[in-house]
Image (cartoon, rainbow, N blue to C red; front, side, top):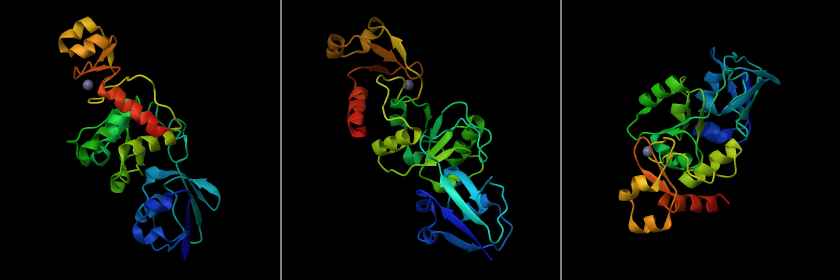
Amino acid sequence: MNAVYHLHGDLSQLLRHRWRERQPIVAPVTRIASIKDMLESFGLPHTEIDRIACNGRTINFSHRVEAGQQFDIYPIPSPWDLTTPTLLRPDPLQSLRFIVDVNVGRLARYLRMAGFDTRYDSSWDDQRILREIAADRSILLTRNLDLLKRNQVEFGRYIRATEPVSQLREMLMLLGRVMLPKTLSRCLECNALLLPVSKQAILHRLEPLTIQYFETFSRCPRCNKIYWAGSHVDRMQQSLQAALG
Ligand SMILES: [Zn+2]
């Protein structure tokens, strides 16, 4: 006897290859398993799912799959609401904080440029990332589907796009934000919030042309990097605005 799984939106694209073309999935119930286990056995990480219905009734991840049941599986909608409790995620987030793994590492700088709290360290392996998430409930952004299946990962996103600008666009669309903030607020190198600094205090670190043309500066309190309108960061932001349309 079978159970039937209807995957909505682009969720079927995240399945293991042999399941990808079969919609809906019709599979025999051969063991005692939760809906979360069944969906992950098809390749779909729990983090990608917003809501599951069984025969039309909303259920949670621990629901036991039985023969004859029909499931509808819905993706995270835009705008992504992380702060309201749901049946699948009864303990929502108080604030937005991302952690980025090494296979989408370049996205970290773009998210920081857009003002998002984004932690990234190219030396962190999967175990270290899972420890960080357990400590502070960061939202994991990755292109590693297996990492998203881990139980420690409550909130996460499989980044569909492969280029950093497209990846940022994907995140802004998902979060329901179409514009970037105008001024830079966060250090691109280390994620700390920038502080204003007087020109006089950093004069010795500036090139003559920068001294001549710019008056307003910010400094990173952690790594000491200096930012100003007209720096490469500003040009990066302009080209990004153009790319985002
Ligand atoms: Zn810094």
